[in-house]
Image (cartoon, rainbow, N blue to C red; front, top):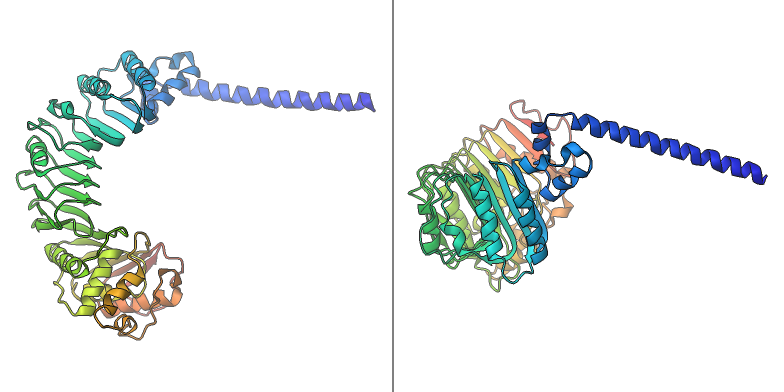
Length: 451
């Protein structure tokens, strides 16, 4: 028995060895087949992964040992900036042989080194010396970097800066080829922003995410600017003014009272929403409603319009109060919102005031939603009964929670849409939990699509 057990164990071990051997041969054949690719294709593949990982692939094949040295994209991502990994980055850049860099990214979640500015300056100078086109500098903690803005970026076309204090620029920048600028989590002043924009004559797209300290943004001299995205900013004044008469596409997601458009007369497409901060000590709901209606007035001529859930909340409050709405020329309307009683009055009024509407898309989203009790308390403080104010004119029992939506509400939503539109061709319902009942209506002029 003992001899038989030993033989069985030996046979099993032999089978395992053969499996491992065959697996290694397959891996080797796979590596060999990739290694046979032209070097240009190998560099293209490696440019899509972090540079540290691209360097590690040199262990797979002798031919790969120096392929990474000429890849067109460098992505240096580290959790922490320390003297040790700063040394590693310096060594990596010293081994790089490429004459041209398309994409160069420095991304650090946080900074532990006391003074990394000399290193950062050196790394950026290296990228500039290789005529970099797309530059991304991402820091998890605020970084003061005044020397950076005095560099002439004659090759940079796209620039993204994250967590920079750029409020102390002394002289205008010279970013003469820049077409796309994104500033995230940056501290800005009106003067510093003006100096940046004056040095970007070819700018086509501007994004400001979670920035602060601006009170006035004049974009009228940027004749090529077509796209403007402003979201989650906390600016000093309650309604920072934005002048952008030439832009065609606008995303404006306010943090309650952060900004308002003064001039956007060339708009063809817009997306509007309000980011709700629970930590705000007071809520100026009347002012926010007025701001939402003024914003709607500014975009009344756009062909494509997207309204977020919180924006619809304040439009609903305005509708309950009986405030007049502007007439809209929108043909393609998207509503990013949960469907419950707090958005229905606003949706109904927007539909009634959109006589040219051809396609409506309703995308179920339930994030950063204004608490229901806050909206009810607003009405109670004015001596109104929330249940009566939110009651549907059609007798539909719209729930006061976005989690209670069912197929009956889907039917009621479509009925509401059809009743309040005249030229509609198509309704698209996206990301709803419940399916729309088939063969619901006999109106062959309007198609209903779910996805």
